[in-house]
Length: 504
Image (cartoon, rainbow, N blue to C red; front, side, top):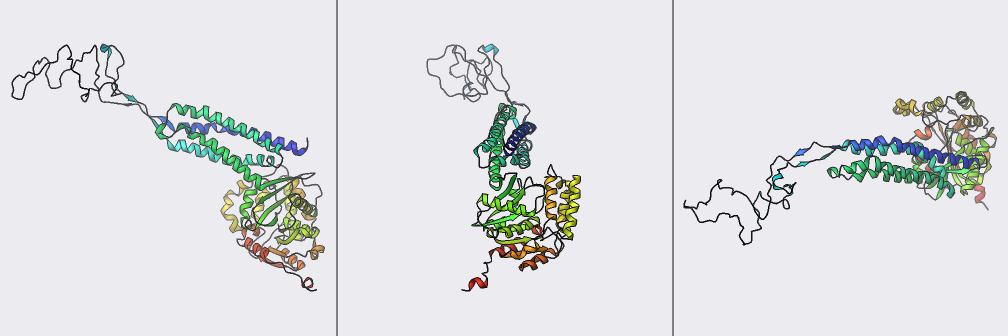
């Protein structure tokens, strides 16, 4: 079994355990939903109902307007009339089926209850009704809370386990789907036995069917399937001989654009959706590939080696040529990719980058190396915001900066240290004139990572056009609102043909 397969098995195990843990944690939320269904106070029907019974073809009743003991009915003239009195024996004439008001039978008036066949035991009963009140805030709040909790859980845990498993090989897909199907079964049983079956016993309260809780299972399934599909489509993994190589793919444009990001503590794992949003302006014209460095950066790896990794990845993916956009360290890699594989690069954009280790680069990288060797990755991540961006840009997120600096930190500092060491060995100055494709250089006047003069030096050596954001820092690639428009205008320009090639 290879290390790649062992890693997949490990991820599958983590996936199942985390799903099981989520199922257990979600039980209190289900009970919160259940708390939204409360039995109301017993309501009593205060009206007394008369009970009419029939025994041996006799009906005993007193005429409403006759006094007890009267044997004659009084006519309108005040004299005794000849109206018949009710005898002990019924007349053979058919009895009218019309029932006076207040004398209905139990069959026609369910309110009249006859608990016993013995007339002596008959009694007038008061009707009771048990109702149920729906606390909508608790019930629907519980459902919403479960949905939000699952969304957070999926983003932080599940998708990191799912998308590496759901690659091209069917066996890897099986590793991902079996734990998920087991999780769905567990959630279904849990929802049925814990709150919903009990809720069913309370009847359909306030017109809300108890089955509505199953919306959670449907939500879990659809969110996972859609989220997994998006992550699998955007976040991709290539298996190299010595490591895993990650890249993100999005957009459906006819042309290819490769974006090479800069130095970062973490890999591109699970970042496809955020990258797609950041570079959404390119997706109409391009199929975008954001290419990372290897997960396991070899010892003594150089910037040139990382450019070879990009070229290998392009070959594996089937990219014949592309426009290339390199940021910071990615710009250094892009230079060597263009130098060593000129046929792969149609146009080149170099943003806030340098051609060599200058004084500013050396100071910044050495500072980060000291922190990394101490294991203080949190400070590196925090300074990655404060040093790269302007105070105005950082101000809105400053209260959350400490918390943000703790999120997404890698377990090991080795990869970051080796990337920093590769930057310190960078020097392409002697070969820059070999680059023949159109190049656009973007710099920043307050750049504290590569220096304010790096863009000027690059553009001069390449003889290309440039633009410098005088009031922005190294984070101009993200902070400048018009930067993507500028890059697109450059990429859309027709390629100029050299004069000597135009002549016969």
